[in-house]
Amino acid sequence: MTIQEQHLSTTRTARYYTLGPSAGSARQIWFVLHGYGQLAGRFLSAFQSLDDGTRCLVAPEALSRFYLGEATARHDKVGASWMTREDRLADIADYVRYLDALYADVMRGRGGGEGVTVLGFSQGTATAARWLALGAARADELILYGGEVPPDLDLAAARGRWERMELILVAGSQDSYITPKILARDEGRLREYGIAHRVEHFEGGHEIRADVLRRIAD
Image (cartoon, rainbow, N blue to C red; front, side):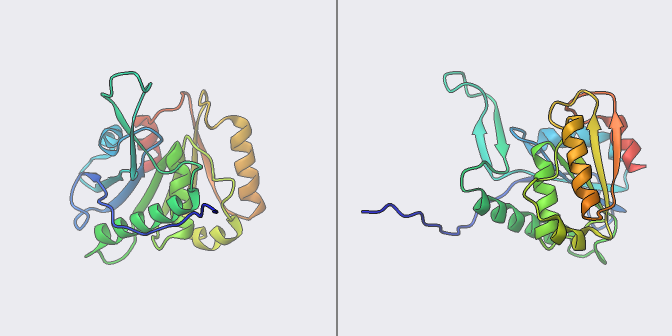
C-alpha cells in the first residue's frame, strides 16, 4: 500500500507580547519578528529603547516551540521557530494567516495602516518578507535585520506590494548570517527587480543593538 501525505487545517492559540501604549493611541506600530530559537517576550525586551510613549511594539511568537540544547540536557530553555524545511509551504501559509489575523486585531479601530513598521531579525527576516509579499497586511517600512531576503521569494510579485514601502537591510560587520557575500547577492536581486532599498551597517555581530534601532527609528 502507498503512504499518502494528508493535511488538515486546525485552530491554534498564538501568543504575542506588546510594549508601549495601546495601538489605538500610538503614533507608530512596530511588528517585530524574532529569530530561530527565540521567544517573543525575551526578544521584545531588546526594543525597550524605542518605548518612548509614541510607539506600540508588537512581538508575535512563532507557532512551533521546542526545547533548546542537547536532548540529554536539562530542558530549562525553550525557543520557537517559524518553519523548517519539513512541510515548509504549509508552515508558510499558516504563519502568513496568523500574522494577518494579528495585524487585523491590532489595527482594529485605527484609521488605516499608516505608521506601521515590520522588522524581522535572523530567521524572522524571511518571515517578515514573505508576510508582506503574500499576506494582506500593509506597512510603511520593512526592516530585514541580520538575515536574508528569502531566495525563493518571487520579487517580481513582491515589487507591486512593496513599491510604497521603505525597505531597509541591516547588517553587522561581524554577522556570520548576513555576510558581505549574502548582502551583495540580496542587493543584486533587489536592483534586478527595481526594488528600492537602503543598507544600514554597524560594527557588531548577530545582535539587536539599541543604538542601531534608534538610528533607524529616527
